[in-house]
Image 1 (cartoon, rainbow, N blue to C red):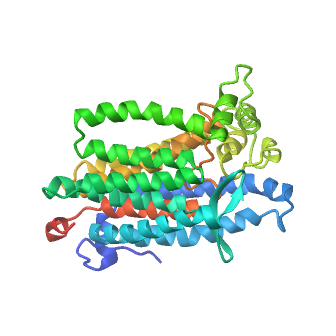
Image 2 (cartoon, rainbow, N blue to C red; image 1 turned 180 degrees about the vertical axis):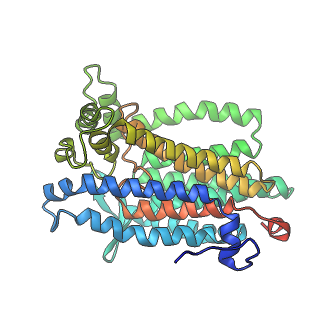
Image 3 (cartoon, rainbow, N blue to C red; image 1 turned 135 degrees about the vertical axis):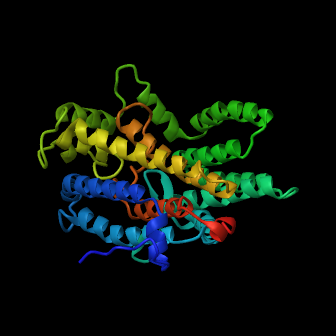
Amino acid sequence: MTISFGRTDTSTLGRWWWTVDRWTIAALFLLVGVGLLLTMAASPAVAERINAQSSFHFVRRQFMFLAPALVIMIGVSLFSPKQIRRMAVIGLLGSIVLLALVPLLGAEIKGAKRWLNLGPLSIQPSEFVKPMFAVVSGWMFASARIEEGFPGRLIATGLFGLVAVLLLIQPDVGQTAIVTAIWATQFFLAGLSIGWVIGLGLAAPLGALGAYYAFPHVQNRVAKFLDPAGNGGYQVETAMKAFKNGGLFGKGPGEGRVKLSLPDAHTDFILAVGGEEFGVVLCLLVVALFAFIVLRGFSRVLKEDNLFVVLATAGLLVQFGLQAMVNMASTLRMMPPKGMTLPFISYGGSSMVALALGMGMVLALTRTRYGREGHDA
């Protein structure tokens, strides 16, 4: 049985089908498929190492998170820009409240408090605050340009400062850097004066230096990365061995050995498992998919004349692309490790659902709109 929609179909699903970017949806589903393949390759060894009830413990949980995540992504892509704004405001307020509760009620893992236990589920609020902030911040910057006298820049900057402080309390420098990149990109696109350009240019290295001296774990990671002897940390060095072992076409599915001793083989360093078992070919496919999704999103939004849509989409795409770049660069020892997941590929429920939410908003905002629908955006 095949489902098709005619161009004259005026139903909700019919309008969605002919206005949404189906190429981006296909790329996202292909990325999810690669993620499931690598999760099945990497996670059983980790499950056995930690004595989980089943070697497929993480695989089952990833499938459990994947179904609602995909439903959320497609469901959100049906929304109008106005509905996206409303959802983002409510979501940002909720995420900020949860971020504020993390230092008080969160579980400490590896010296940081980033998770809240809500009954049988654990949630990482920092994953959800990023897409919500991108949309609300974009709305504020756009409103400041459109409505004379509206303090949109001040509100966006205040929200950025609040979110950044709450993230640094955890501490989570990596997520703070992502939120900073979102805010700075939107500020620039909204019409940044030369004074702000100079100020932010000076503030960036000062902020990095401040993080280095303020957080011992940052000093430790940078020291290992800059170690002249090449001792960049056990996991990074092990990941580099995986890429070397895999070569161009890999050792074959299930034939990788590095995953047996790599603690975060199913999360932060999952690309290394793919490199060993499927080779450089698969890694290049992953890079190409991320590049296609980001560039495709920007190419569609450049046709927009709605400033809110442009700024919000740009912020969401910067978050998605930069997070992927940070994870891959850390795995390849091009920068100190940040403990950041590879979107739609690494194991993690909060990350999967939050990224699906963010990309659902991208699909909604980049849909083709006609007539009154475009004016009401």
